[in-house]
Amino acid sequence: MTVVAPSAKAVKQAIQWLLRLRESGSSPALLQQCEQWRSARHEHELAWQRVIHLHQDLDLRTIPGAGVALHTLETSQRRLHRRQALKLLGGVALVGSATWLARDLDSVSAWASDYATATGERRRLHLPDGSLMQLNTRSAVDLAFDQQQRLVHLKQGELMLTCSEAQDQTRPLLVQTQEALLEGFNARFVVRQDIACTRVSVSQGKVAIHRPGNGQVQWIDSSQHWRLDASGAQRLDRVDMDPMAWSEGLIVTRDMRLHDFLAQVSRYRHGYLACSDDIADLRLSGVFRLDDPEQLLQLLPKTLPVRLRQRTRWWIRVEHMA
Image 1 (cartoon, rainbow, N blue to C red):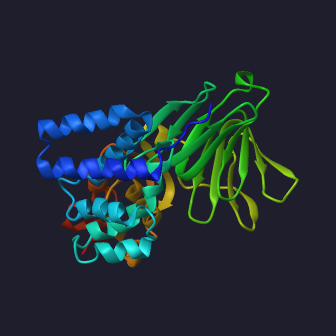
Image 2: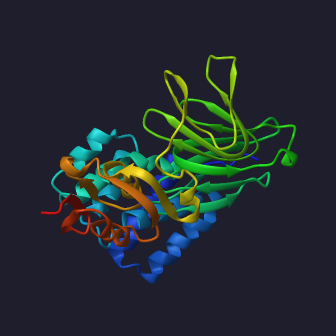
Image 3: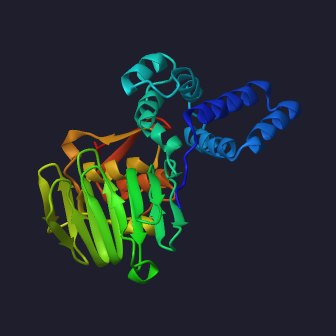
């Protein structure tokens, strides 16, 4: 089974329909026309759902300047590079939301992905072979399931895969990232695509690492954590965060730097979140719920000598308690 993504033309048409509905106040006549367009072809409905998905992620009702992103994407026909798009956005959005928009323009590829998650969203999906795939925040994957293979292409973000050898022994179940091809054997494992590396953690079973241009196979056993980059594969003796906890809606830290903790929390919320350099190395251990990142941040002054300086809903800086 191969899932076909909507064409760029269909996505552009969906954007145009969304903009027309917003400008008209969703008039009944225009809504009916849009419904007719959506029902005309399956590709139209798929494109519509993906545009609505990102529209909800942008939260156009509350984020200043976010609507400009859709206009930018429409006029650019999805061919602008990030720097060009930022020039078009310049001067429109407020400080903070502009930073957020710039970052999320990198996630536009989610529109052309088979499955994707918005900021703060997590999804559970059953693949065509019965394997369970869970997607973390800001993630996008493509599927290529045919008679020869079962391939999950992790384009961005993070996934957890639970697979069984008994499900299909004739076709390998593979996860492709920028750095490697991973094969699971009766395994439950997490794969995260970072900017310059792939991180893999296995909680049960085994995972084989196939590197491009390298005929050798490396194995990741249960309870092991690895980092894969251009220089090779490195086993990590210690991790400061439970890599599986997000699937249960948690961040579980173990003597984690405050700077790194805030970087993780920022993946689940919009806007600017950072700390001053003088407190970046403060250590944090605990269990934190992901469902409400803003409430999570309010716990920091209760556990560390810090205060939250908040300019807007989307701009928070953690500083030393004076």
